[in-house]
Image (cartoon, helix red, strand yellow):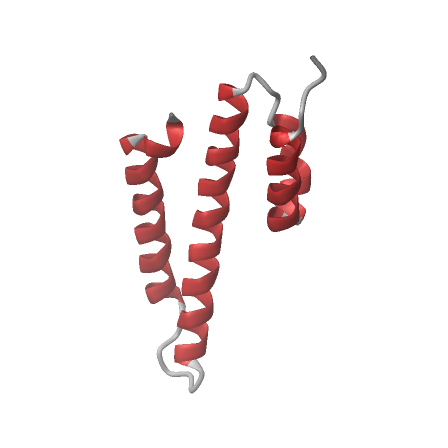
Length: 97
C-alpha cells in the first residue's frame, strides 16, 4: 500500500520542511501581523499535505477494489471532504450478484 510507503512519507515531510523554510524567509519579519501570516501559512501547508495523503489513501483503496480513482481527482481538488465521503459510499455500495 502506498499510504504506508516510506518514500511518500519522507517526500511529504521534505516538501513540508522546504515549504516552511521558504515561508520563514519570504514572510517579512517587520510587520505587525507576522504571527498571523506564519499561522496561516502553517495551516495551509498542513491542509495541502493532508489532501495529498487522503488522495493517496483513495488511490490505494481504489486499487485494492479494482476501481478507477482518476475520475475522482478533479472534484476532489475543489471539495475534498464531500468527494471523500461520496467515494467511501461508492466503494461500500452493494454490487448486484
